[in-house]
Length: 331
Length: 285
Image (tube, rainbow over the protein chains, first blue to last red):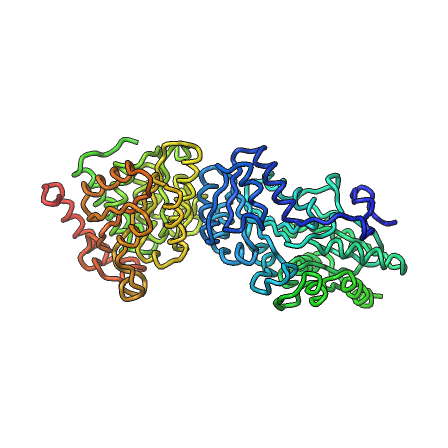
């Protein structure tokens, strides 16, 4: 099988019955507690969503370093900026629809422009929030945060990578944005799977098409690759947990081989990972590109599964995009 | 830094700062005039008598923090900082010019001594509250001073910060409000009424001290009093005359956002020089 062995993915990768499931937010919560032990500067702020953002795990462990903000996302960021300016490292969590959704200017001015160290954690990102509906389904967060100079944008693909990504935010003292989903997804990576901010990871190799994915759609992409392998189509799957700075080198190296690209994300393709990859290809190595993600639209109520199907973000949709892009390949 | 304790010396310092900030605004040929002139006495009292910092070591960890929330009045902040010795006074002439450390709205990273970036209104109180909370966590005895405008009380973020500071009992935070009743489009009570501001803050569980924003002695007293308040943050509601010291600018909102011409500067300096003489002769108390 063309699974990259050094990626150290779980052995039961395609066994739907035995693969474990967990939420990316659970990885965030676990990492907060470890970071709290490691570094006394770490403080956690939350805007009245402590359990659903998993901030409550830190609250339990370090109540004196936990700051309840109430329902006030602009204050979440600006109090965090004050704490950061006074030497703390704040983790600021809400739903992505509200932070960064309601406080983009505060994030830009206080953390971005000042290069202050702080981590904005956007939970319940994407349509898989489900029945809460479109008001609570942030699909624009990757795009809006990507435009802030000095901001690193992370969209971890499972709970293990969410923990790795959260742990990594202490490595550089600047602004970080991490998005998490609400739903439980297959945990397909392990703690031995390489992770470094700014580095994309190759999980599956093939010669015919490159799929670059982030968030829970990485697993969908792996399923698509697995299906197509049986049909003789070689799919390269790249995990772009770091959407910014995009690992252009790894991506272009793969596209030079495959000459066809599909991006997959649970976010708007305009300015999201799709937009980021288009920017890189346009500059370095133009190639046919198809986008899987939210196509300039809003979500609605439904189950996570129904919504991912409705908005064409499942493995079958990635397969369809792969067929389309292969047809567009230059002779 | 050596504190100035003599009231006459402080009044002369405020007069100096008014003249120098007007010169910087004329050199820049853009910027805000009324707010900086109005707040010169408050800045002088805070920087030269009350607050604890060291211009020779701007990053001294145990310093008080002075947070300017309404960044557009930065000409008075920069001029006060130059007089306090953070940087040479000649640099004031670079205000708003390409490559300057004196950005049109303050940028924390470019000028040592600036504690925050501001310009977008309504976020200073929260940032100051964050700093005050950090000092509470660390059990240090530092005070946070936040200078804010009346216009930015129209921002929702301000009230989120006001609620937060009271909830966390941040008695190491003093907010000093420039209550000058003007904003860009007109008088505050015509644009979006703010009164009764003292009652609003009291109802949010703050200590409120109302003071004449041009009475040096009263300003210093109020600031010192606020340092010893317990359990609650303090608002010093400073009754300020916008454009203070220049007769044709005072209380006229058109001077909110424009600089004087060279001729207007000359006239203003004549008035401020006359005021200086009156201070020297003890005619202004």
